[in-house]
Image (tube, chains in turn red, yellow):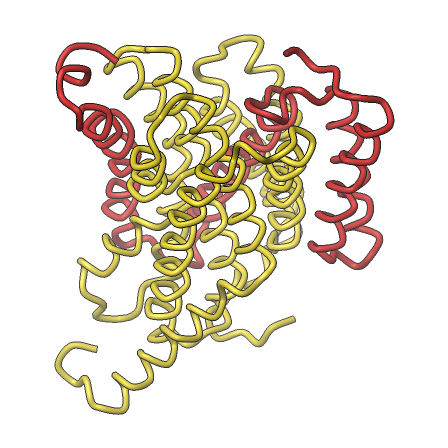
Length: 121
Length: 255
């Protein structure tokens, strides 16, 4: 943070609104404008939804392969393995999301408890 | 519901709003709220105040962008670079909004309602809305979505502040487990919500393409993953598909 954002006590809050909230909301407003007259059964929407889905899939990969905070201290192969176990549990239980989430998180915790933390500090 | 709004239709809207609020007592909402526990802890480690942490959740309401913003503030990155990085992480909200608004819309709905609803569009709200809204009557969709998302965002803000204050006591392993809930939940719930093969293809391609684009062009990795992965999934679906079934007709009965 630089300049005005450090000179006043509410500077960080202003920084959050201008450098964080504004660039975020702009894309939601733009989405409403562009959605204009697209019908919800149109071919264009299938494509847009595929793009949105692939983007979120990218967020998933980023969170697992290049995490921040506490998760970064676990080992990469444990995170990837826990994702695979979680998805397999979800798929084999006729797509129960809760089962998959619990199986994945339990795998991460159990294996990390046994083998230790070990990611980059 | 403008001119012909009657007492009964308003009562119905309130009922749908309340049903949306109750939607927060669900697996997806709980998982999201747990991941805000991790975010509150991250804010504390990054040197923010509790007010800044709560404002970040309330004003952005998009966890990946929030993580980028807090990381930039902790690293002392300048205004413009931070705004661009947060903006890049928020581009994904554009196709999500474009695809959700037509589902949310009812005939004659006021435009401000759509802008209001868009404020709350993020992955969890999008996944839940794409799963549940198509089976609701058109006029129920906005009040249901508003009830769900307003309650969810308020709870997320409170959880951020509360976990910020309690974070010092949380062991690393537990924090890691809480943060891990988000990706495994996104993966399974998106797969469960996918109705077309193109959606499932896009999900798989996105996970596989991100490492490649992160290596080629780190700043644009998410954008490229979405554009290339989504378009490829759509084309494969289109070129190899049997004649498309009616796509998520609003009045269809649940499968």
